[in-house]
Image 1 (cartoon, rainbow, N blue to C red):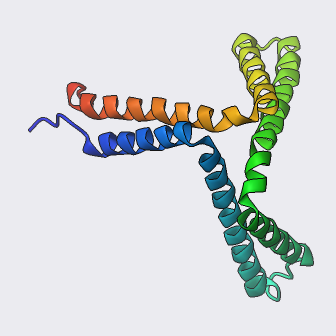
Image 2: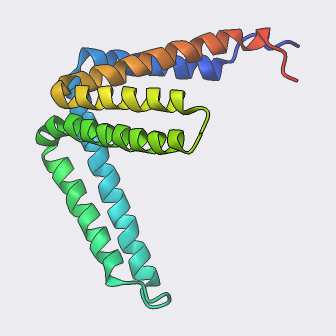
Image 3: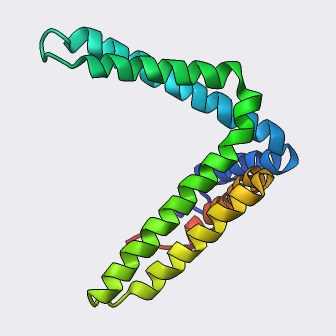
Length: 173
């Protein structure tokens, strides 16, 4: 029997489409949710690191720095959870700074690789330039980040739905 559709891909694509629409329609809510999810992630990581420190401190002679790291994660997480609106305003700048730094790193790396004779440096320099442009764009226009995330989710959702409907047309070998 020939499989004509992959409903897992189709449903996943529809979920991504809905998430993308929400991100585009409600950019402020998107940033607040990112702040809350980030806060929950920091708290969970901190709690798990604390439990690991408790369980292994005597066996492995784990440093007190592991405990400090766990406490800092919990504090950061609580700050994100208690003040998500404030941190929602900071997230686009942090993303912009990170992506700009990545772009600079890529640029310096590719220049060195080009000097060393690496043949495919053109694509890498294009990636560096795109990273720099996107990073600076997020710093200058922070409100665009949730729209960018939403557009990405929409594109990926459409792609998954197309794959889901097309899977039966390809023969797996």
